[in-house]
Amino acid sequence: MVPFDFYVNRYSVVPTEFGRANFLKEVKELAVKRRQILASKSLSEDEKNTRLQDLMLRNPMGSGPPLSIEDLGLNFQFCPSSKVHGFSAVDLKPNGDDEMVTVENAEEYVELMFDFCMHTGIQKQMEAFKEGFNQVFPMEKMSSFSHKEVQMVLCGNQSPSWNADDIINYTEPKLGYTRDSPGFQRFVRVLCGMSSDERKAFLQFTTGCSTLPPGGLANLHPRLTVVRKVDATDSSYPSVNTCVHYLKLPEYSSEDIMRERLLAATMEKGFHLN
Image (cartoon, rainbow, N blue to C red; front, side):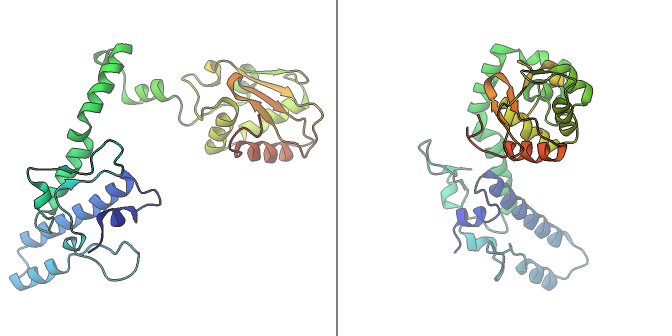
């Protein structure tokens, strides 16, 4: 018998609900195949029985023989990934701990598990969130917005974009840099050449958040300030004062060096480059 948690965790390097979701997806597919076999009018009873016996889950180790769902020893309970809230299992139905999951009732198991994870099991938390949200902004007023607009308001721009004019107009070059200085112009071109992921990393490095507010750089407050880092050479790295969006940038001799040093700095974790 294979422990359920072990089986679920093998689906992902992150042993969380992501692995549980992938597992339930495979069980659902198994149940659908069973239903299709039973409903087939072109198969004899012997052929149906043979195909039903062949319904298996892939081995979580990636190799070895497949497993039947009965091999997992599942019952109709939700087992949380953490016991920090004081419980180890919750029945998905009355006496769920006494009913084992088989290929015959696997579809019911998936439906009950999905309902618990997405509805009944988080209902109290969602009600608390709704109550708190309503204190800030009445939810009934949100019907005026599309889901994309709500996401933009709550989460900002998830794919930050800007052009040269945005950077020139909405950043503040100071203390050794002006909008016309060669170092600042290199900085503008380097930022414009960044990919979406690189822009997110740059924002995380300089502002502490990987997204921009609605309206982009124009609505970033305080505005990004870029100053010339004194006594720096081509081997030096940029540093930041994240809380005030303050970037200390050496005046590199080329765009390539600036790009390399700036991207390397954005990958640094912690406060080593503050």
